[in-house]
Length: 363
Ligand SMILES: [Zn+2]
Image (cartoon, rainbow, N blue to C red; front, side, top):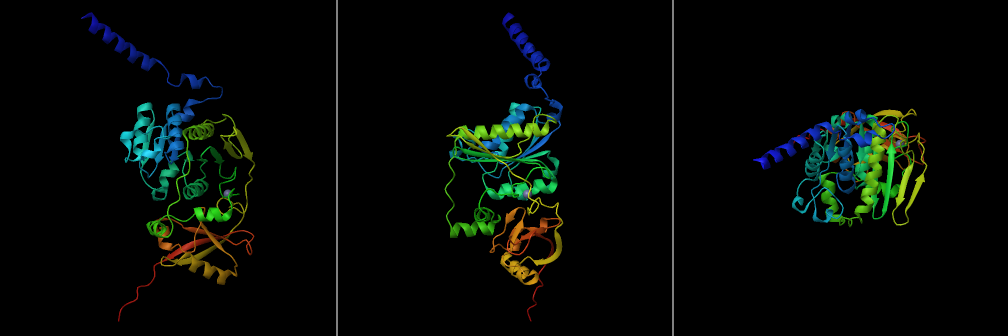
């Protein structure tokens, strides 16, 4: 009898403790911390692998009001060396769903929505709801795509990535700090290679033409460092007046224990965010059966260009890309930027007018 009474007493004590104690007490002791700013905030995390899941943990534990998790991937056995929220039993399951469930169990205060889809398939309203976007993606296409969304919707974005013991971070505050395309730190041809648009046709073509590249080296020590630094930037963006956002490109070499800061500046000619300059805006009819090569040819003829390139959502489109694979019909106002280093001082902005090719009647 006494034993049961004792157990009940302990349970009541725990419940009282749970309601009396403030989960966020220790962080509220930080000068300039304003928990309400976090409680009200919504953050979209694109990619919940090694870096992204760690950011999810930090933001959930800190009490960010809502997390929107996006990852089309499933858990692989080789993820388990660094992606801390996954267990062996999760192999083959959707990453976004697993991360959402684990984070909910860490902090019931946080609302979590997850999407096991490609970023490009999400409705723009999903991005509009977020106060900060986080790119923890392992590919350039995705990063540049989110970069273009961030600029268009004027949402701050924290982007980061890693390769073995090397990591990098950049914070994009549209209109204030440079975007990822203002001064790409990679040679244009590498960016171009990385910027092939998604699409089943392209994927199928790739499988035939070129074997997939080997996976990049990845260690958990580096992903937790980069994920931690990125989480810190998100928290600083959300809590007004807390610290200063990272204003440069930060590079971390884990083997040499060295941080390098590369100063960046807004590029008024940037095809993604350089809209402060007046761009020539042209209504341009395109046919969904056309390829980019055909459009480039028309641009060369019509505007006397020499080496034009077409940029769409921050990606340089390959000549072989078919217009149909860009799924433009889903876009409200599709816009292409056209650059030509030899002929144009600033990019052309093409407002696309989609034309359905006329059907030829059989006689
Ligand atoms: Zn830019």
